Image (cartoon, rainbow, N blue to C red; front, top):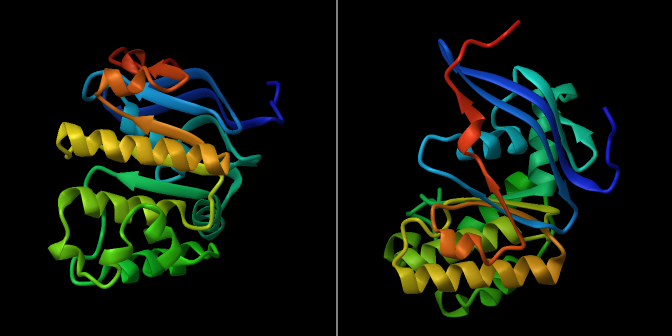
Length: 223
């Protein structure tokens, strides 16, 4: 296997059993540093599984997952957590925020776990929430909550941003604003960006799309 030294992500010969007779399989995927890639396909086709393997939230059973020069399969749990915290920002459709805490506290709590440096208040201002720093998340609109999640993910300029349906729970206007904001920030920071989306119109605005439809296979895994 040839290792691409300029690749942010290199996946090779992945096989991952999901259920008896059903497995996830990917022969090869290369993503260059600074590239923006939309992961598309119908529900249940493996988009979120692929993102979880790249993030190290799930461990592949066979094959190579190389992210930012590190082979994730060779890392222990603590080392994998450090790698993800230092280099990877994540944005989810369901936000994963703490509703009893303020916007600023949520970003700072995330910063404490990631270990990345940066000014949380400045980042929230960057996403248009300077007037909401001390507002509890439970009192924010859906779009504002997603902006807090983006600020938390991009604080400290991680090399990789993984976004799982970040506009899926937003109305079209707010979804467009959130997409444009993420695109602007990753361009500014030179971040590699992978976005899972059902919105083909948004997907086509990224330089590259990857159809995940063939990833889930029903035949038995060949030993």
